[in-house]
Image (cartoon, rainbow, N blue to C red; front, side, top):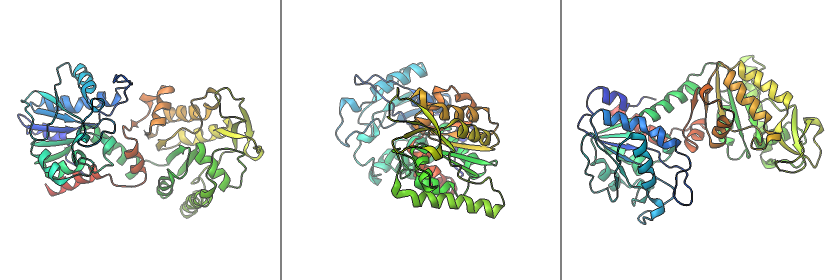
Length: 405
């Protein structure tokens, strides 16, 4: 998907003395006292802002934070803690501007943070009048917020329609490049790991991937549902019995692709062994069992070592890996081996890998493989929608503008 990149706008010299409006994703977790507890998103926004400042632009940055009520600003909705942290990272004062829709005073070489954009009436529903008003604030609109790219809102879509120039910031551009490399033009074999508690939340992803991937590895509660579909007993494990037919359809779709291509390795590998417990607890006794030996009172909390080893061997032979979700209850030491082995296999593989989703990022951090993963996506919902095969509104409008301009 072709979009205009802010880096190219800067390279052309056009950004100098121009007003640049950056939509960043600064929606960071905070403690009850407002203190920021994790600042990854703020740090990720710095390169785009610094690029604009270095180009001599007058820089305006905004983001949403939390779930404010439109038109009803409350102190807990304020980006003030973000402005403070952003100032520390940039090494300069970052003034916070409220009530900014009617106009912003900012000079070339300066940066201001515009207060929580979701407080503005019409933001979430992409009100056209609001979008046109915001577009008048700038010469260049830059979307650098992949985490909100699946939402067509005033600052993610509407302003891009009406701003003189609309382009992708370095973070968004990197996401587009990584996703294109992983899904649009992958080096094969292409392996996808889709795990989580429920098939229902990722059913469309599984269906979409089954048309394109060479190995579709399922884990967590999703794997339990697929085990039911394969005729195996899962005891009292988390599963969705009403979606067994859907799981069977995904299994058959992968099998049919394999037969059509004459490649028996194209499949949904069903676990051959699992780690079970009688209760869901960190101190529960873990027992490794063959999948044919799961008792009625067992809970499956991880894939077994035999299954983990087989999957790891497949991943090490892959050309591209897409990872969304841990394959077991990795937060509990007794049930983390499957996820740990998968993580280490991805780290050791020569494949291009892309990973996304909160639990996936937590596993990556836990096992210290950040530098071995090809690309770590900053988006949760946006990443999932890309895997579903959807076109994200914020990227679609930038692509349309690039084609028109």
